[in-house]
Length: 336
Image (cartoon, rainbow, N blue to C red; front, side, top):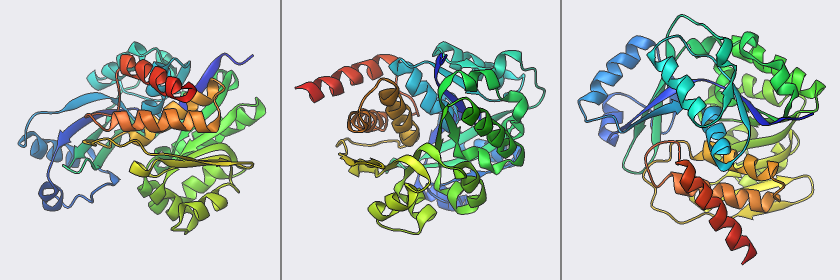
């Protein structure tokens, strides 16, 4: 009996977002558009520099898979998250944050000393986001934080690509995949960031080993994975590893395909001010559509509209009321 729509496994991070200039990135030797891991001291130094620029724009619970599940839950889906936080102020904030949006977690039985992970998100005027992350205790995510019963009860297991930077977490992923396959839970993965494909390719290949049911990636990740500059050509290669593939193309929308058909999802013209979390929103919205029985095209259109709506404001989330209005608007357009 499947009682959970989607269960996710991913990093638990508190996101802190700042507006910066390209000059700031160059001054601090920060590669634009990429996520890099740093230690706690380096992160504290960077926070001090950022604080001189102005106030913190936004703070919320984050992590790639968590962002997708928040979007999924706020559309109306039933979600569960396996993650790890410390018993500190940030950890308490994170627990409450997910509880407030109705996501059940594996945190209820955890008591962990240490430091909860934090991600500094720096947004330039062109809406590009550059991230520097100190994983804290989430780097030690292990099989102890994986809820086997919840995986067995779920329709989909959603795996975050960022986890592959940790050998312990990679072991947890393999365990979770085994439980999923034994219980007919569909496997979904997201690459999360081009840096994961570029610098941790073996970990991506481990997740894809044996195939997955659904894969999310952006144009750059698809090219890095396949060596194909053309998204169409990359799609053909990726379909050898996944039953369904969604490649997001930024303002140009997305292409989604399974073994039988391919659809192009048009982009939605908007003025973007912050692209942080756009891919996560796309995945969460598309998963919601699929769990509600939507076609690939309709689920993709909902995802494209949701991602476009998200980039018009700061932060990796929309409020629940806007998401509900979005469903009505997109579905009404489909039936008009």
